[in-house]
Image (cartoon, rainbow, N blue to C red; front, side):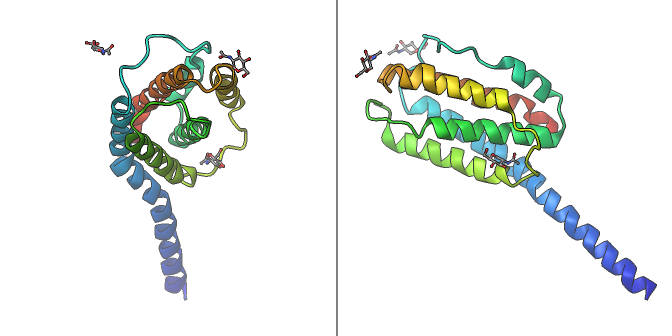
Amino acid sequence: MYTMQSWTCIFLIICSMQSVCHCCDWIRHHYGHLSAEYLSLLDQMGGNITEQDAPVFFPESLYRPIDDAKFEDQVRFRNETIYQITKLFDGNMKSVTWDKKKLDHFLNILERQFENLKSCVSPAKIPERRLKRYFKNLNRMVLRKMNYSALAWELIRKETKHHLERLDIFQAKIH
Ligand SMILES: *[C@@H]1O[C@H](CO)[C@@H](O)[C@H](O)[C@H]1NC(C)=O
Ligand SMILES: *[C@@H]1O[C@H](CO)[C@@H](O)[C@H](O)[C@H]1NC(C)=O
Ligand SMILES: *[C@@H]1O[C@H](CO)[C@@H](O)[C@H](O)[C@H]1NC(C)=O
């Protein structure tokens, strides 16, 4: 009887460990690879990254605490940032001159990364309001204010590149 219970218990522990590690494994094996791929597509899909700066400050102060945060918080932060980027790219892209195939590929990989991060850990109890506000400002002050022009999209591309590169910096901790 006791043996039966212990076996059941061990079995349950192993199952729960696997569900946690499934996500760690996925991040270890695919996150970096997908990240390198979308960064290179982002570079290739258009000309040089513009030297002009977006009229919104990059939220470096939100990244700094995340560099030293727990694995779960890093996953949540990545999840939210990538989600907000995919939302930005939902805007009107009629004036964009980028390579359409590379752009679609870029967005597909970004979406895939998001789908995997989304259910990787439990969502945060307190949502990251400042990150959301920053992306809202970016949308308002760049895309909407500049009428979704080609230049507006170049600024978004530049800002996106900065985020995706910045998200890679704390990757080392996950391994
Ligand atoms: C793009 O950047 C490279 C390297 O900085 C430079 O040599 C080249 O002239 C630039 N191209 C354009 C079209 O500005
Ligand atoms: C990832 O982001 C989406 C959209 O904000 C949210 O619904 C989901 O709960 C988030 N998941 C995690 C693990 O933070
Ligand atoms: C954007 O469009 C509006 C209305 O069509 C126009 O009044 C405004 O000057 C445009 N802004 C820019 C930066 O082109």
